[in-house]
Length: 153
Image (cartoon, rainbow, N blue to C red; front, side):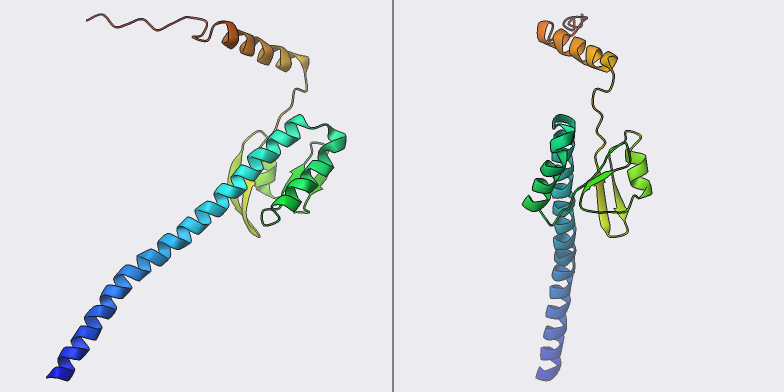
């Protein structure tokens, strides 16, 4: 009788442990993946800022420094002319999609790919529109139409 009770107790404790440990293991797995993708996304956004602001001659050095600072998330910069800077990586369909102006996160052959699209001011008209927008926001922070009117009840 005691052996049967001991076996039942061990079986019940095993079920409780499995019921707690399986979801906990899944939570740890998902959290680790989320943190890795989040860190890679931060690096991609930082690299997008660097690409948009650093002169083309200094860009290779800046990408190399970023890759040496966080080697677990290597960055590759694909230039419009077809050249690449940083860690060598194959050009995937996700890179082609990002070249059209879409920033995405996709699964690639070696893991996750975080792609941030960067556009500079290639034409004076784009710079003029951006400058006008900034000036409007500086002098009219509530917008062109002004403040929203209160509802009358």
